[in-house]
Length: 383
Image (cartoon, rainbow, N blue to C red; front, side, top):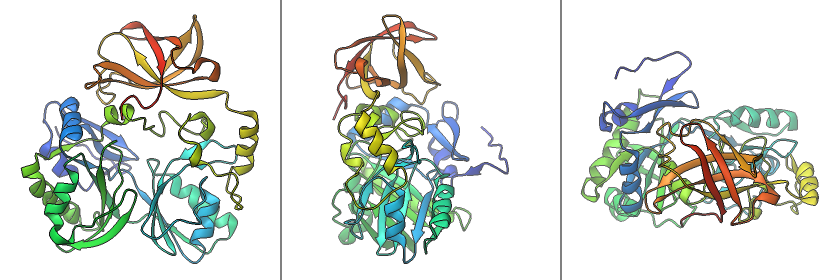
């Protein structure tokens, strides 16, 4: 299928390699952060099984990193996120929220500390760099806020470490979870973190200057990974929404957004907000007030009856759906799919707290399948 390009939509530096691996008749091409990317390569269920049983290579370059560098980098980061980063070590990664002055979530980046005076924020929302620049300007911080040219890929699945060991040999870093290291390989400058969106073991690899030379560096790294992964059954695939829904991972812009505050995310995320720290981050006062009042809504897991609801990336759920209890709307279904391992439909719903207890019976009016019976369950659906 020919790719029509527009001035305001860029192409991933891995796109030519991705399309080469995709089924030319069945793949789904979309736009994320003004960048063309594949929603799936032709068979998202097969891609799911490759992730949970073997290893998958994902193009994650539509996620742009925000770099904060300079003498005031730590002080600036303490203003920017809801976690206390004062103990954040160089070489460590941390998952956190960013909120607006009203406490609404505007991003959930993984923060990578590359040096004493340099951080990266890896977030789904590419526009947060504008927010960061504004905060830096108003606060008069001595920092540079930029978007580095470091297109990431993810190598995810139980065979991911074996692939990395084959690439690096004796130089393979023995990384702990949420740790990072820098390496140079075959003329490529890389940042490697033991992080990812797969709900399994895996890595993210950032390739320096991947776009600057017409994707040559990115394509070289893609080929290196695919050659090393061949004997491990590696598959080029898209990030798996099925697996992230199973494992309780929320998607920014879908399950959480600026209309959601961190206390509505539900049990298990309390550590994401540190209101007892001395630094006054953006939105702290609003979250202190919200903590006192308590959440009025909660994001819960749901099991859904009815026909196969697909893989989320196949167009089966193009928008959020209302959630009813006794005929009254009490929330929205934000994500749903069919879990191949659980053999049932699962998802997330954002409902009033009085409707969020496990076992609560709900109904979701589906535009194609009609009313679907739903039951509130604990998250995650599957570890």
